[in-house]
Amino acid sequence: MRQNRLQDPDTLGDKIFKFAFPTLLGAVAGKAFKSVWDSLVAGGRSAGKGPRSGGAEEAEQQGLVASVIFAAASAAFGSVISTLGTRGSNALVTRRRNRRNAK
Image (spheres, rainbow, N blue to C red):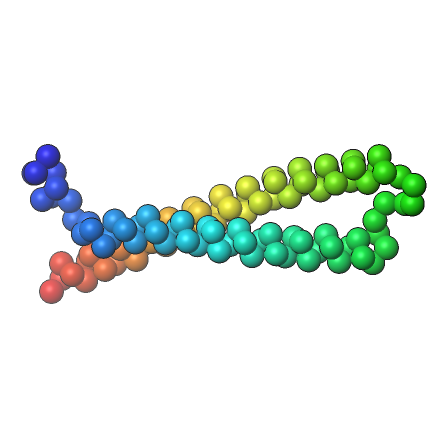
């Protein structure tokens, strides 16, 4: 185990960055996505695009469909952002490690 630790090129800071950066990026992107979604959905309903009066069942179905669409879109967006964040953090750590080893 000691040999593995000594051969590992990542420092503790590198490991923390590789974990924290994609996590924070995903959280911020998720909040931004939710804010944009809420503004679009709320804006569409306030503009008279909501269900017809007297259609409580129709409103419930539209709410369910909107929830499913939001969940799918949010998951896809979160997956893309997480992947990009992981790639970016790995690239930054690798570049930093190469600079450190070149000195």
